[in-house]
Amino acid sequence: MNITVIGVGHVGLVSAAAFARWGHQVVGHDDDAAKLERLQGGEAWFYEPGLQELLDEVIGAGRLTFASDPAEALTDAEVVFVCVGTPPLPGGGPDLSYVETVGRTVATHAPRDLVLVEKSTVPANTGRRLEQVIDRETARLATPYRIQVASNPEFLKEGAAVLDTLHPDRVVYGTSSDSARDVMRGVYAPLVAEDGCPVVETDVASAELIKHASNAFLATRISFINAVAQVCERVGADVSVVAEGMGHDIRIGHRFLQAGLGYGGSCFPKDVDAFAHLAGQVGYEFGLLDEVRDINVGQRASVLHKLEGELWHLTGKSIALLGAAFKPGTDDLRESPALHLADDLRAAGAEVRIYDPVALPNVAEEHPWLARYEDIDELLTGAHAAVVCTDWDEIKAITSDRYLKHLAYPIVIDGRNVHDPTAMIDAGVRYHSMGRRSVND
Ligand SMILES: NC(=O)c1ccc[n+]([C@@H]2O[C@H](COP(=O)([O-])OP(=O)(O)OC[C@H]3O[C@@H](n4cnc5c(N)ncnc54)[C@H](O)[C@@H]3O)[C@@H](O)[C@H]2O)c1
Image (cartoon, rainbow, N blue to C red; front, side, top):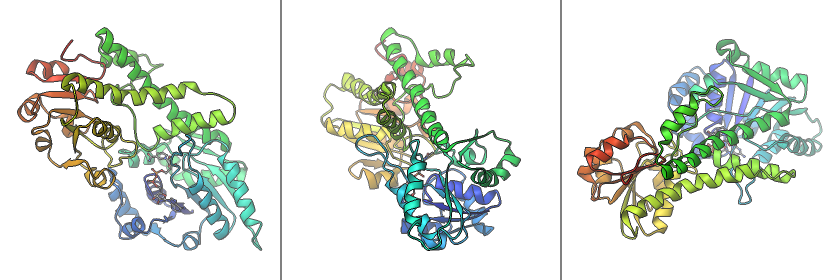
């Protein structure tokens, strides 16, 4: 099939490459000239394991090309995927203006009847609004084509995006006609034949809602275990063991029950807010999601309290943050708990320094005031305390000896529960973690 992907970012580029791998002919378009230039040179513009290799393969085979002109990008399109951002607005809802812009562009340049697929995460009933926009635009054309809107939410995880896309847990698409459903079947037929993943075919609004409900549920699990961690700290229990004990129940399972600094990234915070906002708009107060967000923010405050407990005032104290990315395997800093914590520490008067194995160039752009270190030992040297913010392997591997050798005061707040509390405390580290044994217990 001839597929056009509009917005070749974390979702769009990986999806475009996967469509090409499955044998489709794909054109990627983006309105950011700098990103397109790198892609036209065959280079991914962000870090994601396995992505460059996949791009080499499909660009080399001539199945993925890029076009900066939207009309050119749409010349052969039978299916168009919208993969542009839907960032949060101050009121909690998502900014859907990028999606609307794409709707207008496609309506104006459509070369034939086609299916326009929302892959961006959007609130339920965005499809209807998009159809309205398209109808208004096409009404002005002499020979309007039929553009049907479908929803095909994306569930990939940054850091494992290529693997998740080539071997998804499920594919979900929502359509409003048999012909649009058949087009979506055609897009995913090679994947389903090869991988055998489950496919959920539904209406557009249900598909849209599946995405928000899934992310809100996963965020709820994280906040739930973080709330449990708070109780564990107060009663002397160990949240890791509690989570393990809970997870053996097959109705519960082990995943997304790691206590820590909380969730971040471009999806969970925004999608929790957007889902609560949508519910409020249609007359249901989804208070549970407000609580999920508050617990998440509270985890950062709890790290700050632990630091103050050890250091008294933070003014003039040097704090070493281990990890900047919101999780390992990515250089994405959007809503990174580490950077939120850096802001909080700076506001409290601390001097903040940071290490990350891949995200430092992005830190330089987004938080230029942060002192950046490419070497963990250099980062730790002379700092008054260290905070584990991202569970990269090289951070998990830091031993008590290294902390004791380099830190000015041997204080470690393990925001990701990556170290063994007993080993750290017995070695003499003033060690605190999230919902587990701390040095004072
Ligand atoms: N990042 C994830 O892990 C993830 C996972 C699932 C779903 N999503 C959803 O997918 C959507 C995209 O997220 P992302 O992380 O890929 O964002 P991104 O910022 O990495 O990519 C979006 C791209 O769209 C481009 N763009 C914006 N407006 C455009 C326009 N009018 N025309 C052409 N290009 C335009 C931007 O330049 C950018 O390259 C969001 O709705 C997000 O919630 C993201």
